[in-house]
Length: 315
Image (cartoon, rainbow, N blue to C red; front, side, top):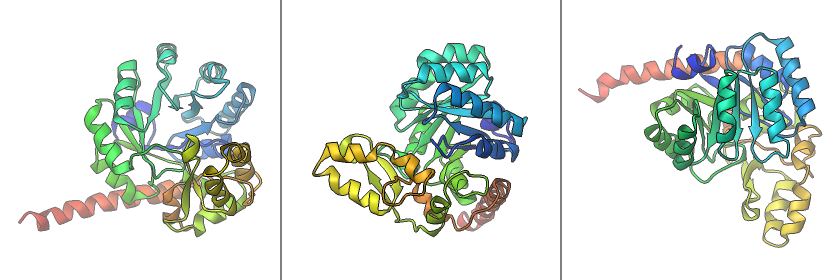
């Protein structure tokens, strides 16, 4: 399968892994890349030295392209970008802003720049800044979110920019991928689906909760604090939602380190299990290679079924 995304990133399938702090390790990213998609190391919780180590680990596990996700709000952002350039990653996905000041040097190094956007206005801005593609991430996604649904956002962004659009948020299977392509996307990003894999180095409680979740088993915390994040419903998530209306300071204090407590320790009483609404579509834990194979087979089947029905609809 060839789209502008596969050609841009030199990958077999137009699928990239979401940039997930603590969950986006070298092992998982390498497994995704080895299976023909683009694995992304999530640098959100990393120092520059740790990122360098993870990139090198990933490159020992696969010779295929590897990417890195960098949050522009990170206190180490300049050094993280420097490390990614020095280690020669294939692409950087940027979150929380416009990476314009980094783009010229990254392009000189042959590194593709793909910002995550939650609005068409930002998509237009990063395109003017020289971005190679954009990830239009809807509010159904796990972790920090915007205010617009994937179906509306991808539709609008694809009409707004000329660079390739990668859809994210609520996508975990081939049908979701087909829907994204119908909206104008040329690739998809998935995070939650890759957490529920054998290669994901997260606590088993995290995987278990994703598989057990229904499509209504997530909640948005931090909205009143100014940084909304979609997480699985747990006693801790419920407590944060209640505290937001009473004590901002206490809620902020409890949220500090809560992602690590969830991903690494499986702590349902004190951890934020960042996951998207697509959790309700995931019913098993399997190897990354099987996940991608199943998605591509279902994607092709969905497209073929639509083509077959076309003659029924217009007769």
